[in-house]
Image (tube, rainbow, N blue to C red):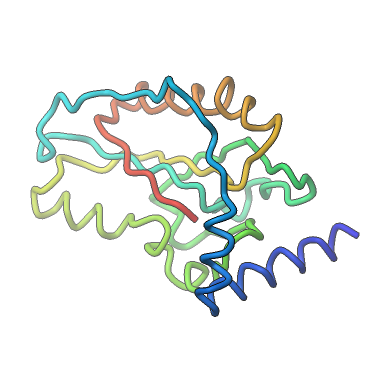
Length: 172
């Protein structure tokens, strides 16, 4: 049954990628979580002096890491730490809710590491963080609270520990 659900989810993602009307219908049916407490941190450092980290909801991870769980229809609120020094040669994507065939071929579609390195070399940004973080998007129901109360604060603390000045969020 789980394999059938995964096949269904992958098929819907590919159909939405191929037929914009289906994607529009899925987009229109989305109801975002209402929150009055959206965190905001003002920029305190010039971009050309800032260390930039990436956080993605694309479900990417190193091949040796445990895949994100696709068995729970409400998602997987866990995260993976990404080492950019090895990621380009060793990554996989475990996510059934979007068509990631192109991202399977080019990491920079979902995690623009090469572009960040180019910007650092050009002096546009100060530097690129060593560690980046990946979540699986499509987290609903009780897992939203796990994400908000546990895993997101853990990642935020890690980013602070790594002295990241800014974070670029990329979707899957």
